[in-house]
Image (tube, rainbow, N blue to C red; front, side, top):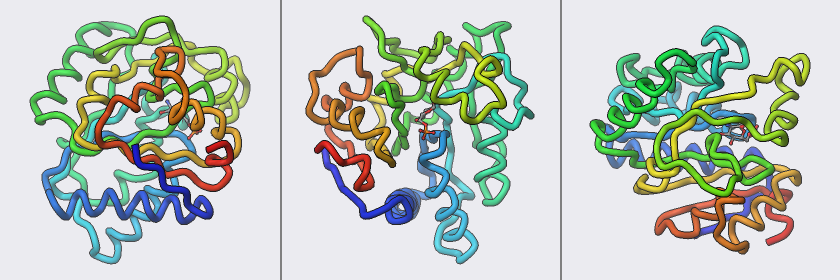
Length: 241
Ligand code: GLP
């Protein structure tokens, strides 16, 4: 694991965007695994600026998002579909056919999950996977548990996650209780993983991911088993390392 501590969130976002754009420059057909949440927003902003300055071309990349809430309309402002189009896809030249986000539908869920895994395999797997981290150590929506899922699956959100994500909804009751998430396999099979962490509330989770025991109770600790992981943390998130 490589850990790079940046002075602040702005520098972290710029560094992350530079790493993504280098990946695309070295392979314009790159398959990117994308994350949502507050943390990668700065990275998406930097990537949009780079695109506007003709420094990066998203025309041939393929993307797979990590997760989506279950039974939340894709047009809902807190859906990850809305987030991705609003904060990134609508502002760059990515092709619609190359965008993949799990469909957050309860109906035919098993089919949706296995189709998603097949699409990732058909694309040749993920070249660069971007991750955030939950305060409880979750990655994607792979929540701490006595076991983890290999494939894309439906997950019951942990109480800490519902609490943490309630800041985006008008009340905690509005936060969906279930989500669909890529499993650990597609994440761990990615050639490179880039995990972003910002703010003191992530400091404990980062410490456990790097130095803690490898346990399904802290899903990000499994990243210690991967051979190409970079963690970008700002000073506050790196407080305990
Ligand atoms: C959500 C997402 C994760 C994300 C995490 C942290 O629950 N499913 O993919 O990494 O929250 O989000 P934030 O960056 O807003 O702290």
